[in-house]
Length: 275
Image (cartoon, rainbow, N blue to C red; front, side):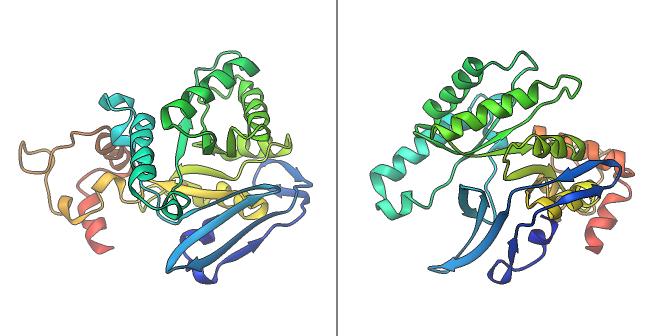
């Protein structure tokens, strides 16, 4: 939810509501969502958020350490690295430390027929790589909305959650219309991960409103645009070779394209400095 980005966790709470025929923007109506609750607490000076949707529940830190730079494109699959990490925690740290570790992973399948066996096979691969009996959160993405197979995939993921192979089902980079369709089909998702920064405030439009109404959490990425919003890139001229830090990662290249679409690098450093 948008408020979660701005309010202190120690004082934030949200109680779900039942919705009847509430219109959100120009997308279809929302009806009869089950209660969803998000509560926050502090324990041992740690701030955590507990996301709940019905019987689904996951507590996690406010700030999540992303692993895009260690994804498959960098010849270091993030899930395998997490498996190495979690096993080191098991060997070297007390059990109470292990209980606080959470691993979120994504699944971005090709838009093929989403059968139960196909979905199960892919989730089992993630479980094996991460070396966990149950995925804390499976964040699902689908890039061809003309193919409604994403609904089949999510229903199968929900079945696997009922079997205990997944603790919570979530989304990544879904638009508002499709998120609403998913919720209308009774699929309990707890969050949607979207890009959000000073340059890209799209989630504050329809998406934020729908999330406020339904309790779906927004997990944002690109908040500092891979570092472009840091002092490292202030007052730099990217058009001059070697005059600025290199844009040598997929994330920096992606966010540079966002800057270009926003208005160009000449406007960007001044905007960043003023913030």
